[in-house]
View 1 (spheres, rainbow, N blue to C red):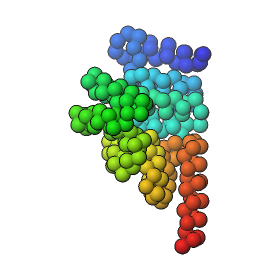
View 2: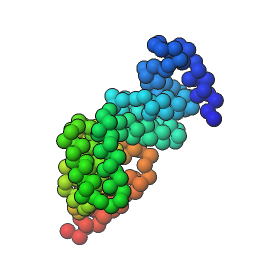
View 3: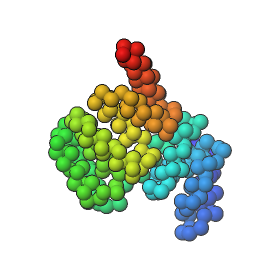
View 4: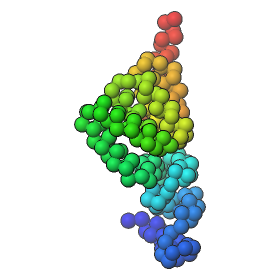
Length: 212
């Protein structure tokens, strides 16, 4: 139980404007920069519940927070926000597509995600899920195109950047893969797996150049 966080929410619930007992989003955003990590944590949790795509930059900045709980929760809250389409029909397609993908029915999943991108082209997560299914199907070039689209719509999407790196490994374009993982690390500076990919790729590229 985070006692300081409870005091924080009790306080701003009284002082916030609007409906009695409600916490305003501006108050939540302000507390993302609080010096107390417990308060930052509670603000991140709340923003994951009520935040919108426009709050992505503020949350993404906390992926580099010195407190491991804060940055881990920022990661989770970002995914929660990114998954919200605001359209029940799209949400139903998402659930169906993910189910198909998890069951290994990749071509059917790709078709469902394609329908999502056609019906709601500004919904980045539709493109990201299709990119994932295409990567699983080893259709790397097509997946890269979808990853690029995701980044155009959401420059903070570390998942798409990392996925792009994996796709470039699949095409044996190690320089492009290294660049993608370096871009990922800028958003996820504490990611050990990303740092490891960079280390391995740099070593492999160096060895290949020695052989030239």
